[in-house]
Amino acid sequence: MTDLSAVKAVLRTQVIETPSWGYGNSGTRFKVFAQPGVPRDAFEKLDDAAAVHAFTGVAPRVSVHIPWDAVDDYAALRRYAEDRGLELGAVNSNTFQDDDYRIGSVCHPDRAVRRKALAHLLACVDIMDATGSRDLKLWFADGTNYPGQDDITARQDRLGEALAEVYARLGDDQRMVLEYKLFEPAFYTTDVPDWGTSYAHCLRLGPKARVVVDTGHHAPGTNIEFIVAFLLREDRLGAFDFNSRFYADDDLMAGSADPFQLFRILHEVAKNDGFRPDRQVAFMLDQCHNIEAKIPAVIRSVMNVQEATAKALLVDLDALRAAQLEGDVLAANAVLMDAYHTDVRPLLRELREERGLAPDPVAAYRRSGRQERITAERVGGLQAGWGA
Ligand code: PSV
Ligand code: MN
Image (cartoon, rainbow, N blue to C red; front, side, top):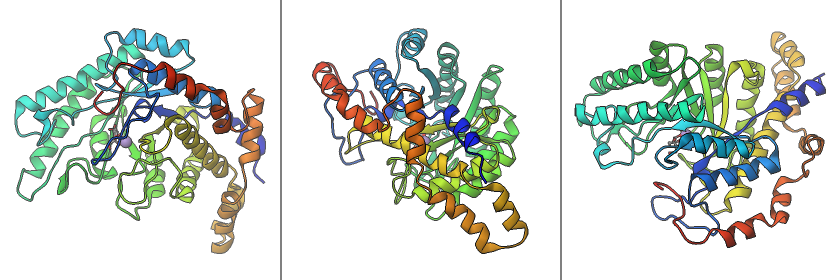
């Protein structure tokens, strides 16, 4: 029997980090649809994140993206967050939106471009010093489009050099988390295309370097939970970027296309003690809400991660192990499916009420009138979105 009080204890301490860019305008390569009431700067994005936290109780941390959230005074941004019960989470670097980066950033053949990209990464660590962020999140759009375009090996060397310089700059309590992505924007080679490449670089760098698993960054059919189990075993799982996909890097609401996959991933986290705070796994969302209302979409995503977590924690691990050791394939599978099919919504409603929150956060947000208020207030100025 699973100990329900232990399940509740983990759910009470769970933190889901939301992305600042999830609150801003975004779109596909075809069109960015503007929405009324969208934040005009990094401070208003924090206001929206604070609303998500106020209604869910589990989202007190926000990832920022530089330069999209660039401000003059990062200590002031930190105070603004703290005044709203938030803390600033991962600092995401951006070496993909400058003309100089057309054929690469830290892997570019031209040393001057590589130095420019490196300077940005080091500046992001300066920002972490001011914001109190623990993690520098690195995702590189670097790669090539055509066979022969550049030397795959030389590009790995350049990448390794840049990463080593950034690693040397990290403070004792800071980490770098290196994200991989199969393809896009590069279509032939990508310089960090998979978890193995990220892991190999992290191993060379040292214990403060860990892998980020973005659930949208794999080939269709990839067994993501295997990757998660492996990285946890090696103590190199730094963070998740949760989002959902049907085809490629769709960045849809976590758990929407395949809630069973999210459950399977979180089962590996639960089984390998990945929810223990000392394992230091960051549970972040990395999503864009292009056609749906943004704040309720982030709330829904947070709830989806919570639901999958609750189900994963309900797996009767003793019964599972007994069935596995007996080689009882059907019984082992049934243990997992029993947990997956449990309706955990009453449990989560109870935990919210314990915190003094409304049991249905999306409905409560809609009733609150906040959306109408920000729509009326946020007029004038430029809406923040990609590149803003
Ligand atoms: C890249 O597709 C990515 O997943 C990285 O996490 C970035 O930080 C994020 O999207 C936003 O560009
Ligand atoms: Mn990501």
